[in-house]
Image 1 (cartoon, rainbow, N blue to C red):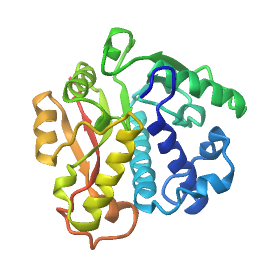
Image 2 (image 1 turned 45 degrees about the vertical axis):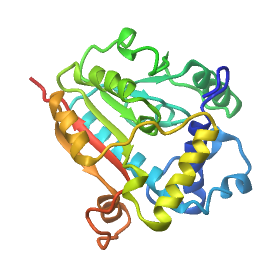
Image 3 (image 1 turned 180 degrees about the vertical axis):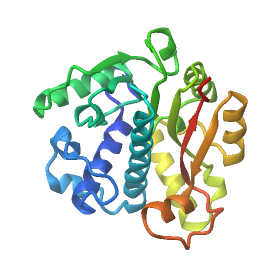
Image 4 (image 1 turned 60 degrees about the vertical axis):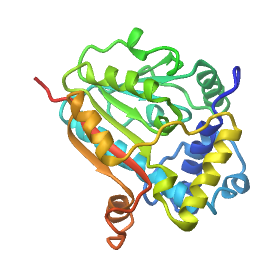
Length: 270
C-alpha cells in the first residue's frame, strides 16, 4: 500500500461484503453495516456483481470465521483480535456482551476507517480498541495486551505478506495456550487450469498494479505441517469443495479442486 493512503484491497473486500448484501440478500453472511460504512451509491456497489466467485468466497470466509468465533465465545473466550481489520464491521455489531475487540491494522488504514465510521454515523462502542501495526516491519506482540486466550480473525491478509511476515504473526498467535485463529490463504495459480488460472492471474496482476501484490501461496499439506510444528491442533481447512458443500449446497465439486481456502486452528489449552 502507498504511504499515507489506506489499503485499496481492504476497500475492495469491503465492497464485496456490501455487494453480497444487495445482490445475494446477505444469504451467506448478513452484515447490516456493510453498505452503510462504505457510503457508496448502490450502482457503484453493483459494479462488483459480475465477480460472483470472489464475492461469495468473501461472504463464506466471513461466515465461517464468525461462526467459529461464536463457538469460541461459548467456550469462554473474551477477547477478539482482528488482524488487518480494514472496514470489517464486527466490532460495531458485536452480539457478545462480554467480548472485547482489538482491531490491528496499518495506521493509515485505521485513520481512514475512523473517518468512515464518523461519516456514516457508526459510533465505536467502548468494547473496541485500535492498535496500529505494519505487519512487515513490526510485530503486534510488542504492544498487544492479552490477559487470557484470544480469538484471532485474520482475513484477506496472508496472501499479501512475505513468508517472514506471516510466520512472525503466526508465532504471536501460537504464544498462548487456548488461542485460536481463522485465516484464509490461496493456492498458487499454477495449480489451476484454463479459465480459472487466467482469472486468478488477472486478479493477481490487478492488485500488484495497486501496489499490494500477492506474495505468499500455500498448499494444504504445507500449511498443515507449519501449523502443527508451532503446536496448533484442531485444524479445520475448507477449500473450494468444502466451501461449496457447506455454504452453497454444492456437493459435486471435486474434493481436490485448488483455490482459496479458509482455515481454523487452535493452540490446546493446558
